[in-house]
Length: 134
Image: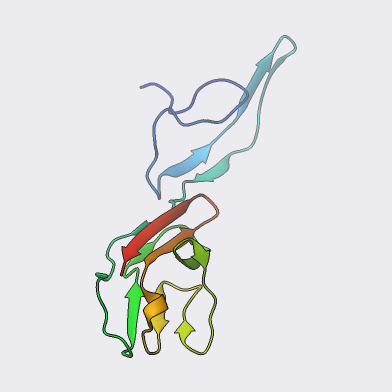
């Protein structure tokens, strides 16, 4: 069986690894002076963010409450969330809540709430945009 990693100065997997893959690895260095091997270390493979379900967007009645939700979000911790409307970063105020969470809530929908919404889900490994149009 071929080793799962290339032999050079970098540790790089030959193929994509799934979260939870990993195990114990050793580094063997060889040059003209000889060879040395480090002590075993544990390699952990983490996953980027993923969204398994999200609420359906669409028309919402004026002056009613509504929310947009990423539903089931998974990935390596810690995770960060930021909502955008038409490319503009949203912040919490008296009418909007959850600007940095998986669920964005509106207390009484107004005309200016119409638009394209993006939730940017980030981990230390990657960022994943999720879109809605209202």
